[in-house]
Image (cartoon, rainbow, N blue to C red; front, side, top):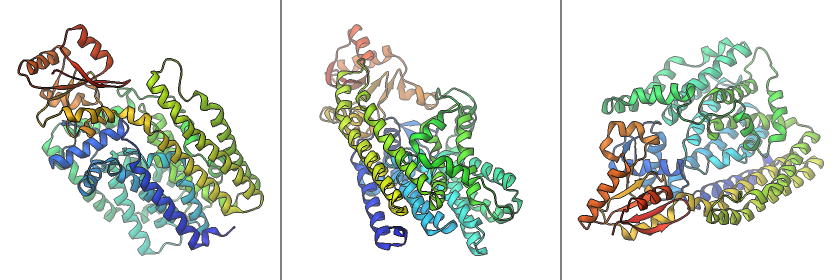
Length: 552
């Protein structure tokens, strides 16, 4: 039981089961707004229009992010049709590929056992697993950053031949270019800053001679530059908005209203790295031990994890997924520490997982929220509780079983048990969320709207924009009195929206006079306002968050 990493039967069985479950669950949930609906709809519009340069959301220019995610999702729709698993396929493959690449790199740089542990650790970490099942940019960026990190480690290890070093550094440069196409300049800035810090702390100036800067920069610009040039030629307003507003202002100003405390991401690491939290401090401490005169992969991993965490902690814009790129580095550090960790430390890590499961049981009754929540939403959250209950029971049982294995000195079985428990718990949490996620997305309302629609039926979205409903309706809507993330695009094309409620009422009444059916998605507050103004309307469908009305 202490050499499972050498058993091809065990490794391939685990890998096959992991991959099948990982890919299967991509299609069991509705696309939950805002991110999943947004990026699925952008890709649907790209495929429908055939415009692979100018990215749009709801038919409006949308330049907040580069196009890699939209390209890949659009290709998925083109190959496999429109649907939930197709919308998540790219991020699913990115998450799965990140696990495999992290395990491979750890195997090459450290040892076969560390590679086995690293794959198990990353493939069961809560944040990595959850983000790998969600259609968002965070996993796309993180996978490209994982290419950068792993290629750098393999290329710079002391045993690398000149050919290996050149080839893997070119892979590293390509990964940086793809990271830029995934989310912008941080794909270059973060690895560059990590390298500078590593050079200073490790006193390893010679590493710059092994980066293959000439060929690497040529490859980087060949991959990253063409889209930026083409989109700027078609849309001269794009460079300022993307590079100034979405980079400089997002980082330094609070214009996006996503600020948080300086320790925001440090707190998120606690659940994010589960079930391995009990090993994280020791792994980080072990990683800072320096060995002068040789390449120091553990130190590079520590710098990668710490710098990226504090970089985003300083930013004025904070969202949980921002620190996802640190998890492959943390997985390799934890795996490296696990290889020689004492029985006591393994038991402590497993025991912490038991405590987390117990804490989950205590917190479970509060899951449905307070009395102020809408009764329908409360009922859905109460129905979600058994799934969370099963997840925390599995976590606690897995921790207890891992403690037993650790006590019996079954190293590999201890790690594998914790990984399986962590992975299974996250899957239950995600799958059980579906009824509530379906309501959040408004999918049922979209289905009820379809019989009311003709190809030329206008649809309005009044004082709201439902990110997922447009995808399920397979068409865009006309925004009414709504700006938010569309502010820049509508400033370029104001004719695509109606700025006021009164303007919408005039258009609505015009449709009625022409006996032309129109539909509108409205918030409860907007519905009450329309009713007080005497607007003729009939409710087609409604839920706790929005109503669908028609004029005929």
